[in-house]
Length: 360
Image 1 (cartoon, rainbow, N blue to C red):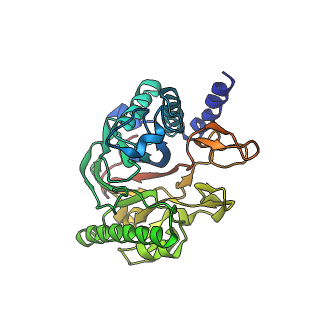
Image 2: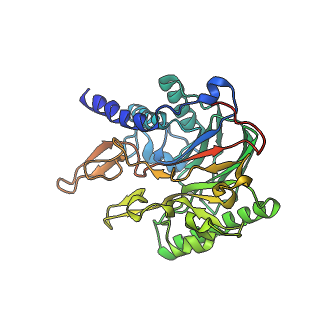
Image 3: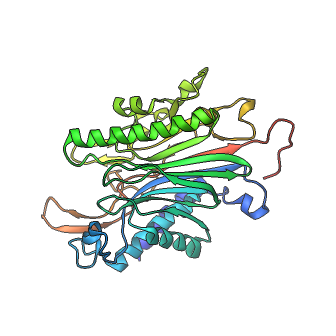
């Protein structure tokens, strides 16, 4: 009971920050003038069933070495749902989910426990050898969905286009190759993933230079890694001022102070990595009259969630994982949330010139 009380008490801090934004458009049936987008690698969200067609889930079963049982799975869903419900995102991108079922279970927790409904679920099984995928939960129906080609045994990026309140917005959800394995091999895979994404972005911008694309995910590359920035032609947000390059991408993480970008704590190296990023096209940063009638980023709204109870006593992401105690050599469960911190951004839209703003 003590843990439960602390958990809900700490979660209230997140409610205090995000409270008051919840779903005005849904209540009034007016087109929304603001969206909250949240992205989170939720760290190995497996169900407790052994899927014979997915050998990657064997450790996350009751008979696997992690002894992953229904009660642990249920507790993890409860923890994830509490954080999502505190933020109340309109669009939620998540990575490291085993299948459609676990995403539906999370949506059910949010609906039944917090009256927060996500009627639209975007997911399909990817060729990843661990059997983990990307997914999207949305309060609004997608106008179109697609997936980019994945590298061998990797996750397929989701491409989802929305027409929300009459304004177009495309999300691309990524989870690139981890740093586990030979450096040259992992670097090569991520480089090819970057080229695939960049080619898709170029094709979209060639068709519509004013396209509003929000690209997010766990890229397993720091936001300032030259290989990452060069492959995607990604610039800091401030570089948009005076720029006429409509093909550039702008990494919102690069607009934060260096000590606020970290989303993953690399314990062996004793450092923060900024693996989780959101990148946008120029149109999403426009502040002039052209921006009216379309979605744009609310200035300074991008942030990494570093609130209690997401952090452990050392200030690092509080995982939901079985870890080895170096002092005793024994394994024990840490029932937190994820080894990654979520990132969020707010978007707003204004009516075209000459059209009166509707109340919201």
